[in-house]
Structure formats: structure tokens, C-alpha cells
Image (tube, rainbow, N blue to C red; front, side, top):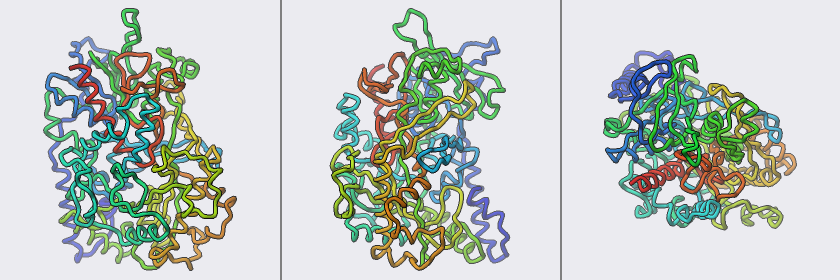
Length: 634
């Protein structure tokens, strides 16, 4: 349920009429925004298979999936007016969704029609639980409904990529230009230590610091410093990402989320006659020419149909003269490739799918950041739990903040709830003096790369459900470099059936050991001044974690297994790699090996997880691919 919809259903008295009027005016403004030229009449861009209508001219590129990468690619490729691009997205626009625009409201999009609402298989090493996986069905993809955390990982992560794919253009010193290309950093007087020369200032994607900082985030940052984590003035520079600070977010100067839809599919871009954007349509198959005139099967087009009709409506076919570029994400990209005959041959044969190319690596190598939620009571009453009002007093506070946000774009509603962030290594002897570090495998990309993240959250909430235990906050230890890998597999040959998601969480002892250390560290931070002044350790509510310091490592291992959850960063299921290496689906130019005219650009291409957040990496990869393609067809 949207935040504003919740408010409108509350009973209010006349004294609140003016505030409610402001809320209503905001809704009206959003609804009156100029409609964008998005296409839902598919006969305008393609031919229905059951008609004898004219064949449409071939597009130069068909981009499948208008997500984080797809919007950027469509924009950059159509900068050349001679190039015709068809972008096909299964969802709708997110520009008018309150949950996508207001940073604090992003969780309201979970488990709605804008979310694929996936679940994993029961995880045998994580309490045999199914884990909910939100995946966006919106233009902009997960950049339209995530926590907006602008962080790229450690520089050595990209040097590692370069070694794995055999291409130095992926090294940090070379790849960094694409972060700068998309960035439009706006300085904040609250953060004068940021070196603006290390950021882009003219790109389409605004990044910066929200005008609001929760007091508890400041206490968390200072507690981390007191615990031994250094302060970092900026996580996203060549100096590395270890340290603690408030994290940058993808927002504009007015406190509004900047998704890749908002950044790249502007009214000016959508008005280009060489760009057609289709929404609410699902591509069900990539078409190939398998005749002997080509050395390899060649991608020549796609079939798609209405998402709402789920296969019962007309099927349409669009053709390309150059390439199909798949940008459906780490779950749905391998699903589409397998449905189209590109994937593990024995698996495809199981569902009577004709094998175009036997690619065992497709759908394998699935990796995801794992998080454990730790909950603490707030004895100062400063948490933002009132944003889910339970009485008249908290409703007043919420309406006050809504008014501030509408008029100024500031206040708690401009926050993403996850402001204070620390990155560290699990082999740090200062942070973990009681552990033997010699026997812990180093899974990082280099000595300056973290394998643990701790995030401070200003509310007791997880996705769309509240814990309901009054004022409180959370600390989230995150496993950044898991060694457990899983798979994406088909459930059937039906493109409308969700694939089988099996991340194989915590299947290695390494992952358990690092997360246990993360839990120990988070507990230590919660009880280090000044955050200890906020933590109500006397509260013995069984839903809280004030007792964890008394648990043994064996007991903490069981806790970790019972709480392990996704941090929403699946990667690797169509990984780049050197030729001849098992599982290397793509070359370093993001071309699918064994076929022509087919590339992939999304989080599935990453051979390993970055030690941070993935949105910026995917945008940068899209910028890089746009340059590659432009140069190739010059």
C-alpha cells in the first residue's frame, strides 16, 4: 500500500484539513504530469503473428528489458539519429509512482504488481526457508524501487574482473570513466571533505547526500570510529572503500529518487523519432537464423506479447538488422536465454526446448549478498518508526514531515532509512581480536577490499512488514564476498512461469564464519558510545537482539542460518570470462559466445560480486557497452 494512500484512509479532523489538502495537491500534481509517449499498442511497432499485415522495417537494436541498464542503453544508442532502437519493458513507467519518487516510500512497492514477487527454493543451509526476492517490473528496473545506495565497490574488484575476463578495459583505472560519465554529483555543505574532482558533474544521474540525516546515523558513524573503523570522506574514489560514513544516494537536489528511467528516458529522449519504447510487454523468445549461411546462429529478432494477458493475447514479432541486447537482470535474462534455446543442453531437452547452443554456464554462478537483521530498542525515541503511524500523535508527525517534503524536498521522507554504512574486513585484528585469522579464507579482491558491510537502519522494518515493537533501529551485517553459488533454472517451458531461484545460501563454512563475525561486530557497535546511548539494553523483548553478546559462536551460527536474507544484489548468471573457461557465457564485450548478434548487459554479466552495491556498476557497464557498440558499427 502506498504511503500516501495509507494516509488518505485515516480518519482525520478538521484541524488537519490544510495538511491533507497539501497531500492531495501532491497527488494531483503527480497524476497531471505529462504523459510520456510509451507504447502499449504493439501493432505500432511490430507485426502480429496471426495477421498478414506489412512487415515493419528492421530495428538496428532491440533492447529487451527497460531496467537499470536498458534505459541507459536505449538513450545512448539513439544519440545517433540514424540508429533505430526498440526498447521492450514488461512493466510500466515508475515516474508517477509515489513509492518510486519519494525515497522513504520505496518499500511500498514490494509485493505489488510492480514486483515479480519471487521466492527462492527452500534453502537447506539457511533453516530450510524460502527467501522472498523482490525484482522490479518497472522502467528503470530495480533502480526504480531499491534503497538508492550509490556505491560502486572496491577498485580492486574491477582489477579482478579484468583478470577474469582477460581485458584491461575493465580495470578500475580504465572502467572508472563510466562512473564519471553517468554521474551528476551535487555537493553538500554537510560533507565538505568530498573531493568533487573525483566525481562527474554533467552526467544524467544525480547523486549526492539527502538534506536529512537521522541522528542515529551520526551516532552509528561515531561508534564505528570508536570501535576501530576509520572515517571515509568518500567511498567512491580510487582511495578505496573501507571505512564508515553516510552513503550517497541516487536523488536529485529536490529530494526525489533518480532512477535510470528518470535520468535517461527524459521527455526529450522519448521524443526521438528513432526510439520506440514498449511497455507492459514480455519478450518470450529470441529468434535465431540457424541456416548454414552463418557461421553461428544469429539473433534476428524477438517475439513478445502483453504481460497482462500472460500468453492469451496476440503474439508480436520484431526484427533487428544488427543485435538483440538482453537487459532483464540476473534472474530473467538466463530464463529468456534458456527459453530461446541458449543454455545447458540437458536442462533444455528436459523441457523439449530445441537447443540452439549448449551453454552450461547460463543460469549458473548465481551469487548474492547475504544480510542478517539485528534489532535494538531505541531508548531516546528518535527512530523513524512514526512513519508507520499507530496513533494520533505519530500521525501528526508524519503529516508534518509530508508537508516539509512537499514544500522543500527535505526532512525524513527524503531519507532512504539506510544512511550510515561501514565497510571493513573480517580479518581485521583490531575489530576481531578474539579470532584466529590465519584459518579464514580471504575471499576479497585485494587488501583494500572489504568483505563485510554494516548498515544502520532508522526503523524496525523489513520490506513491507513491521516488527511492531515500538521505537527501535536495526543494524545489518552484510556478507559482501560470498563463496556460495547457486543457479537459476527453468520450471517449465512456459515463459509465464517463474524460474527456479536457488542461491544456495551459506553452503560454505567461510560464509557462515564471516557473517558470525559481522554479527559480533554489529553487536559491538550497538554497545559502543555514542550509539550505546541510544541502545536500550534493558529491554528484554524476545524480538530484540540485546542478548546476542552472551551467545557462543555455535549459537550465532544457528542464528545466522535462521535469519539469512537477500540484500537484493544477485549477479553472475551470464558471466563474462576468458574463452575456454568453464561457465564463461560472455566475452569481455558482453557478446554471448556461440551465437552472433546477441549481447547481455545487466548484473548477470558480473563474474563475481563487487564488495558493495550493484546499481552503479550496472549503469557504468551500460555506458561502456554503448561505447563499444557505437565504435563497432561506426
